Length: 382
Ligand SMILES: [Zn+2]
Image 1 (cartoon, rainbow, N blue to C red):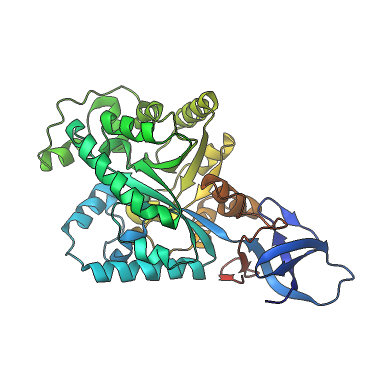
Image 2: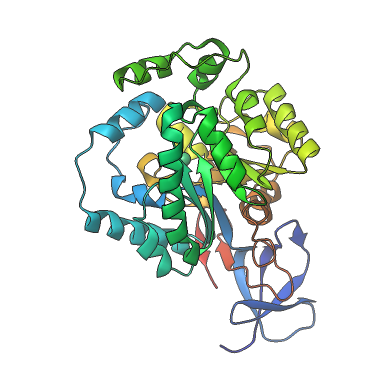
């Protein structure tokens, strides 16, 4: 591909607006960033140029469940519906994975933090141009499940390693035993992990008082949780201390996270030299629970926010711009560039891909998106 000089009404470089600049590119690689005044042959686009978007939380393997689960069921209703669904053939599941990755690419996403419970997304990833951080997800609230579940996770992880960095991660505080947390932690030195955090108020009720819907769930599953002692603390404050080895932790959802939880997590991170990223999936929160995460409290505490789509089972599309639109409805006063930073440079750093992605910097090939002037639609240019 020939060398090209491109500019637009506005250019966002991953951190800030570039004023009167143009990008010199070849094969999608940023060769130079120059003053556009007086330069001939500048190809001008109407709208905003941004680096490729980063989707920090997805479950590609659930893509066959698009449009099958009704909205506003609440988390327990959602989990119940998933368990009642008909069986899908492996072919249907794998083909839906491939379509999901294509949809993300079309919507300007260049990298995905992707949850894997199975190897169903493996073929689609092998054939995709997207970058992946695979999070092999383990669950098991009964202590005796820890060893077999972890061994199974190791086998799945080994298969994903050829498609990108791969780590073994806990599903959520309400579904992982202390024993399993300890096994995951021991394996996580210098790795990036994620965990679903405070998606429903009952998660805190379980840890604070051993009350709430999770007790019914475990009863229904015939799981005896007599061993479990409430800590009197929120779920996050109860389990985060088990995870002191990973270099980075993505806390996902945070719909019911309080300011004291935020400060607790940031303090632990400071003491253990970890990085915490607060990954928000507002469309999924809206779809499942009709809630929106406490973005104002997170911003007040100056933490690092990133964005994710969650799975298409609980979303309308796999499009990070649509996640921004959802937040803009509830937080219209947050500057556009801050939202874009969450979608680009913050996301790239969260997935450990900041050397290649997330910003317009010389030598990088970050993907180039064009967002329409009215901020409503997105197109992948390179
Ligand atoms: Zn999720």
